[in-house]
Length: 500
Ligand SMILES: Cc1ncc(COP(=O)(O)O)c(C=O)c1O
Image 1 (cartoon, rainbow, N blue to C red):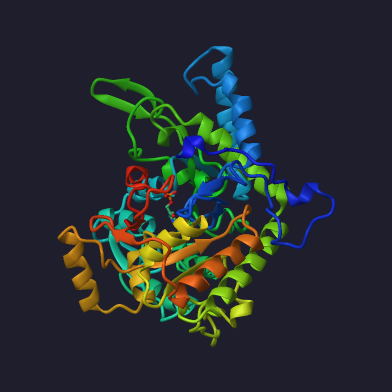
Image 2 (cartoon, rainbow, N blue to C red):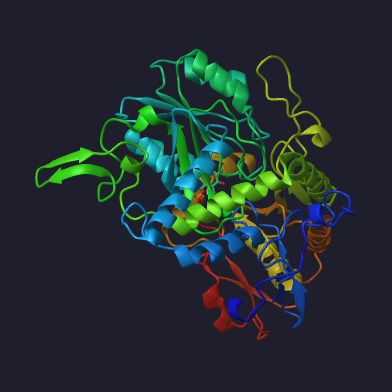
């Protein structure tokens, strides 16, 4: 299907028009694929409304252009004396320098390890911290699996719980930090991929550092939307979530943390000298990057960081704040729709020192992300119908944050046990979940309004124009139709969406 679709558009950056429409009304960046139309079950094509930026973002046009410009010089990195190898090595090292600058950590004692993505960065760090099973890592139930599972492999996790609105306070984290044995690390997200909630990272870092505990911030969702915080010792983030979908991510941290011990990957490029029974590892960051690096990904990553900074954080935040308010308030106003998390109905006000100030809905500082359910309609069916009938792309399921979503949904141990039993039997039809809509630089108020109109139709109980069937092995729904793009033969293109 994708190959038959147009791949570029004429959407212009607001900054270049000279007559910028109000924030939120036009895309804030020129993205490859903007303006693409997709087939719907009524046989027509509609503009694709990409409300799935929290999963992956399209490439900025400037990123794609930079990649095309670089490709003639593509060659080995740190592995060749030829002119092109030297050029590719320079481009790669320039990208590393840009990543450090983007984190506000250029010119110091920090290194950027270029890896595949946030998941790899956090696994890398978990391995490198030389933890043992008795060591404690404090983390939270709000985390993405990428910031939960790696710690379990090497240490004991101590969890900070969230309240019914899906938030925790600084005091909650302090209580976990102060329990014995003293933790070796605080591993916390900079922004939730489910609710868009922004934990108070600066205060959390202060509290951890007062106790001599280092902090890693999972910045996968934060990096595309906010300047990165200075406090965390380590940062992990992904290029594909910030308009550079070419397979690079970064782990940033103090050089000293990587100076001793075995690297995460062993192999060429990470060594000074090898004999059959001896290895002398080289210095970081190369020590951490065995194997030929993804130079195209690194070049794209750096170009996207340039692109974000050229737009400017104020514009990014203004654009997204307007979309966030419209999205969350709009969904919350639809009968039968429940928005999960601090932006939703059960809003908690800040109460006392160390309490996260989640305030009133309109004042909540959050990403333009809303996770919701529609009363009486399976989350997978909501997502399938939005796509097949309106051309709107969202995600459904548990968003790789099962513990958090189960709490937000208010499910008890017996519900969870039953869901586990069914999944283990290969039946995902009743897997708990919700629907997530998430905006980025390419999203507009029109996109949000199209979603709100469509969700209102779904919530009203209006009959679907075609029947839908559910695949028990994935839990996904498919329209029963021969319409182009949606026939049974086209289903192979769509993998399960609810896995996490
Ligand atoms: C908060 C958060 N952390 C980590 C990840 C993992 O990122 P990646 O898939 O790029 O490894 C994601 C991805 O959705 C995320 O949202």
